[in-house]
Length: 186
Image 1 (cartoon, rainbow, N blue to C red):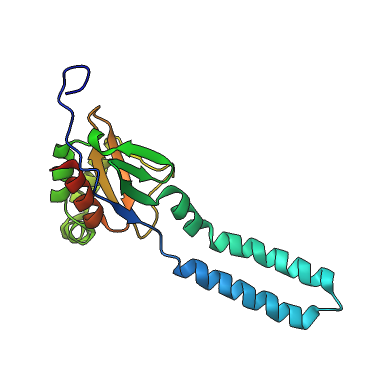
Image 2 (cartoon, rainbow, N blue to C red):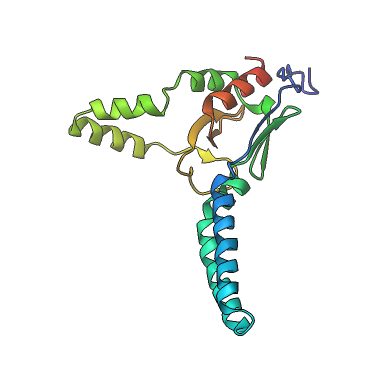
């Protein structure tokens, strides 16, 4: 019991889960940049150091554009569950604040492939009505600090004990949901 006389929710602090973004695209881009800079060095150095530095700087701008999404995913969507705390990007949530009802409801939600099949089965009028109803609902707050769910990630909607709906962007929805239900004792 806590100080207010309410039962404290059971949380298993030994459950851990970590989801880091893949680094393949980042490694490919960095490798291509290094090869490009070396090729330009063989072409321009030692005569045109200034030209080589300008080419490398302009190429670095292109590299930053190519790495913007992986950097954003690393900053805002890295997931770690440990010691009864869920950390998504820069935010920290106590697992005890997540309701067991919302975790059970999330487990029964259809996956991405099932939703695509359902949308494909709708007539244009039914699809228009479904979109109208969806747009009239308020969207849950995205946890982590980003503006939207990145491409290639799935959504997991949970609710806190205060009644706030939260949207978590994840790469492995089933694994995260399994870890949260184990940690929450559902």
